[in-house]
Amino acid sequence: MSYKVYYFNFRGLAEPIRFMLKYNGTEFEDVRIERENWPEWKDKMPMKQMPVLEIDGKKYFQSVSICRYLATKFGLSGKDADENLEIDSVVDTFVDMRLKVTQAFMLPEDQKEAAMKKVLEETIPLYLSKLNSLAEENDGYLACKRLTWADIYVTSLSALINFIGKGQDLFATYPALKKVIDTVESIENIKKWIAERPVTEY
Amino acid sequence: MSYKVYYFNFRGLAEPIRFMLKYNGTEFEDVRIERENWPEWKDKMPMKQMPVLEIDGKKYFQSVSICRYLATKFGLSGKDADENLEIDSVVDTFVDMRLKVTQAFMLPEDQKEAAMKKVLEETIPLYLSKLNSLAEENDGYLACKRLTWADIYVTSLSALINFIGKGQDLFATYPALKKVIDTVESIENIKKWIAERPVTEY
Image (cartoon, rainbow over all chains, first blue to last red):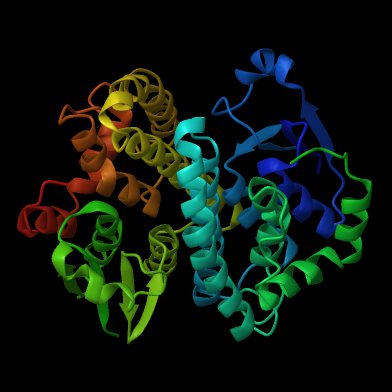
C-alpha cells in the first residue's frame, strides 16, 4: 500500500498521523505544501483542508478519525468497546483542550492576554491534571494500562501545546503524564523520527 | 444495566446520546439539571462538564466517544476499520461544523454579525454540501450505504444548527442530507421520543 500525508510544512495536526505511521514502520511520502502554494492545492482536498492521508490514491480526512483507523490496523486500539471508550475519551479530552488553547491563542491582541491567562491558569491545569490522574491509574499509560494510540496522539501534540504556552514545559508539573510522553518519545521508531524530521517552529 | 444521562434541561449535546439509547429501546434516567443547581453538581462530574452517561454507577464523559461506544453495542457501527473510518470522518466533519457555528454564535455582539454571516454563507454550505454528496453516494445514508450512528448523530443535532441559524431550515436545500434526517426521524422509537421529549428551546 502507498501512503501520502498532505499538510503544511509544520508538525501541527499532521504530526499524530506521522507518529502513527512511523511507530509502525510504515513508509509514507511526507508531502509538505508551502502556504503560497496552498490555493492551487485546496480544491484537491476533500474538505479543502489538511491534514489528508492518501492510501492507494484515496484521500481520507479528519485527523483523529485517521489515527483511530491506523490504530486498528497497527494494534494500538482497544480489545473491545469498553477499552475503545476509555481511549476515545482520553483523545477527545485532549482535543477539547487543544481547541480551547488554540482558540484563545488566535484571538485579537486586545482579547488574547486575558483569554490566555485563563487558559494557562484554569483550562490547562484542569485537563492536564485529569490526564495525569488517568496516567497514574493506568500504570504510566493514558488508558488500558498499556500503550495505545491515545499515548501517541497526546505525545505528538504536546510540543504544540507547549509552543502555544510560550515554550514553557506545561507538562513538567504532571509527572505521570510527563512519563507517558517520555515513554512514547523513547520508542525507537519515534525517537528516530523526532531526530530526523524537518525542523519547524510548531 | 442501569443508564443515566446527566445534562442541562435542554437537548444540546446530550441529545445524540438520548437518541442512541431511544433508538435501541434502552431505558435510561434522563437527569436534567437546572442552571442554578449546577454548582452543586459540577464537582461530581469527571471533567466538571456534561453530558455524562452513567452506566451501573460509572460515569463516562465525551459525547462523541459515548455515541461510538453505544453504536458498537447497538449494531450501528462499521463492520471493519474501513467502515468505521467512513463513519468517524462524517461525525468529525459535523462536529467541526458545529464548533465553528457555535463559536461564531457566542461572540460578543460587535463581532457576531460578521462572523455569523461568514458561517451562514461559507462554512455551513461547505460542510452541508459535503455531507449531501456523501448521502447521495451512500443511498440515502451518510456512510456505508446503511443506517449507522453517523445518521443518528447528525439528525439529533440538526435542530441545534437550525436554532443557531435563526430557525430557518438550513438543511432544506440539501435534499439527500434532508432525506437522511427524515429517515432517522421516522424510526418508530425516535419518532416517539421526539413527540414525548421535554420541549426546550434548543
